[in-house]
Amino acid sequence: MIVQPKIRGFICTTAHPEGCAKHVQDQIDYVKSQPALSSVGKKVLVIGSSTGYGLASRIAAAFGGNKAATIGVFFEKASDGKRTASAGWYNSVAFEEKAHAEGMYAKSFNGDAFSDEMRAKVIETIKNDLGKVDLVVYSLASPRRQDPKNGEVYKSVLKPIGKDYTNLSINIAARQLEEVTLQAATDDDIAQTQKVMGGEDWQLWIDALLEADALEDGARTVAYSYIGPELTTAVYRNGTIGRAKDHLESTSKELDKKLKDKVGGRAFISVNKAVVTQSSSAIPFIPLYFIILTRVMQAKGVEELCIHQIYRMFAERLYAGKVDDNGFIRVDDWEMREDIQTEVNGYWDNLSQDNLLDVSDLDTYDKDFLRLFGFGLEGVDYAADVEINRPLPSMEGEG
Image (tube, rainbow, N blue to C red):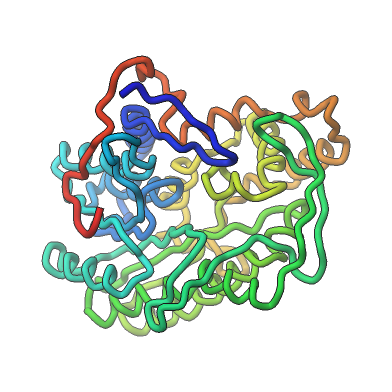
C-alpha cells in the first residue's frame, strides 16, 4: 500500500510504518550521540510507552548506554490489512526490532493499562523475566478510564473552572485565527477528569508492584506533568486538567514517602515543556501558543523535542535528585525563561491575521505534527509500496 497522510480535524487517520521506524531511529541516534546515561535503571517499566514522552523514555533507557531491559504498556491499534496501524503501534514495532537487534530485552503489552488484568499480566512477566524493575515511568494519556474496582467509565474534559473562558485560538488547517469560548466546568467534569488524568492509576501500579515485591531497592518512579505560562493558565493549569495534575502531583508525594519506607526508593514529577502531541493538538489555544513559542525558542537555540527533554531529565535531574522548591523536576526551565516568555507574550498581544505568519512558525508545527505519524521524515520513500501489517515481535496481551 502507498500510504499518505489523511487529516481529520486534529488527528491523522493514517500512519507510515517506515516513517515511524525512521522517527524512532532518529531518536535512538540522538541518544547514542550523547554521553552515556550510566545512572539510569537497567530494568525499566514504561506505562504509556508508544508515543511522545513515554516512547522517548523507553528509547533513552534502552539506547542511552545501559542497554536497559524494557517493558512497555500501551493501547494501540494494529493494522487490519486495509487500514494502517496507529503510529504508536508502528513506533513500538520499530523500537522492539531495534532493541532486539542489539541484544536487548524488550516486551510490549497492548491493552487497557488501567485494568487490574493488565497490571497482573505485566507484573507476572516482570517476576518471571526480570525479577524486579528499578525504574517505572508513568506516561499515560487517555480521554477515558474505566475504574477497575467498580467498572464505572470516566471521561476527561478540557474546561475552565469558575467561569467561561474566551481567547484567541487557531484553525491549523485553514491557518486562520479564531475566537474560542470554553464553557465552565461542572463539579462532575472536575471529578471525572481527575479520575482519568490524576494520580489514582499511578498509585495502583506502584502499590501492585510493591505488593508483588517487584521493585528493586532504590527503585524510582516518575510521572510527567505540565504547568505552562500565564497565557495558558485559565484553560490549562487552573482548569479541569490542572486539577487532575494537582492530584497527580500530590500522589507523587505520597508515593515518595511510601517508596522511601518500603524500598529506599523515590517518586518524582517531571514538569516538561510544551511539545506537539496528538492530545495537545486537540486543546484550544495551546497550538497557537506553541507555534509562537517554537519560533522564539528556535531563534534562541533552545528548542527541544521529547527525546531531548527526556535525555536531559535522565542525565541531569532524575538520579541527581535535582528539584525545585515544590519537589518537582523542571525540564520546562528553558520554556519558562523570563526572556522567552516576555517575547512570546509580546507576539501574542500584537497578534492578528495579517501578521500571523510573521510571528509564528506554522511550518514547523505542521512538520512536527506529521512526524508524529511517520510522515515528512528524511530518507523515507513515501511513493513506495509498503507492507502495513507489522506484528510486534514480542506481542503480549491482546493486539
